[in-house]
Image (tube, rainbow, N blue to C red):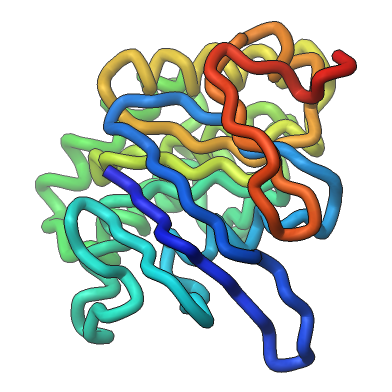
Length: 228
């Protein structure tokens, strides 16, 4: 599903964020992306989402070379990918319903489809009774659930979660992980960049470890680090 071949990313300021990274992620996998700050995790995610282009190498998503896509193709790529961020990135002036509906509106869905689809997704993430509330009226965990709802409303084949538990307490973090695991069991591939070693160690999923822009470990049923 996702293949990186000898990918290097060097930013204009000379910083080498990734160095000769080769990896493959299969459809339906749940993969943790770990490593210290500055290891290259966010850059790798941005390459898949085409927020960045590789300096060298190829990024392949569903058989297409992401780096060679025309700009008119990029929105269609991004509709296949749901993003969940640490800082939520909700629209404060819009209700829960409207925040989730916005993702459908951008994709060109009609009003009838939106009215039908959004309540189903809100029920799936446990927010059926919060549709009319605004982000400021929600807890951090509820806001993150809105983010997940927004990410999955277009039926993406891939969810990328970038430090999704970073602003959540431990109990709420595990509630979010259960939600992501449920989405994964439905067939959606999940890539989660995280520093949450306890979650990684408990879940025993595939672990990709980066250090200094290099992939130093690719381990099935892995742990956050060898010492864990």
